[in-house]
Image (tube, rainbow, N blue to C red; front, side):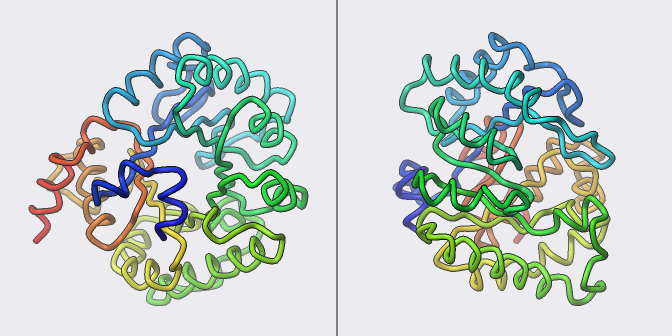
Length: 282
């Protein structure tokens, strides 16, 4: 676990806390902040705020993967992504940057422009992705549930067996990464909250998270439930406030062993706030 964190999130590792991946959407149709940061200057300003608030890395995405999304061609994804990525890299040469993409061509251009990590929610749907990551020595985040999310296949587990399903999926993706020559210390695994999971399914996976974290070792686990609708149902005490419910959900993930939290509101997840939220869960 320390390998990925030592390379990409050393401050979080040294401080003994979950790393925070601040979300920078450069899409016009994100479910949370669609269009707000699509302009390169706006993306840079937002990234700068996230870093000042304590982000350990930045996760840039130029294609929304919300339910019912419309796929974006590689050329359009690059048109949206590269100006923002280049601006952020120039202004913050030491920042760790992850790029959320399913396409090897986009990942290659992003790595050329200074990205450090590829966040591939499809987990090698593009057959060129794993060889690219291995060849470039980049970090990679692999997620469970993509094919179920887009309806490419039915989920292979019913409620009651979802933790085992997630763990088996992540182990399979890790095996593919290792077979491609990707070093285990460059891999982070994402259980895919909200992907192939509906409502209370996410609660079940949250309860199974300690077992998932243990089964994924030595790779760290990333939790990404930020502002997704199910967090309010999981924590009704948040009163429908998605940011507050997100903090409580992520605090539970951190208590269960998640080492990276992918969040919109970095300031709210800074160490004292996250610790207070975790204490309320005791």
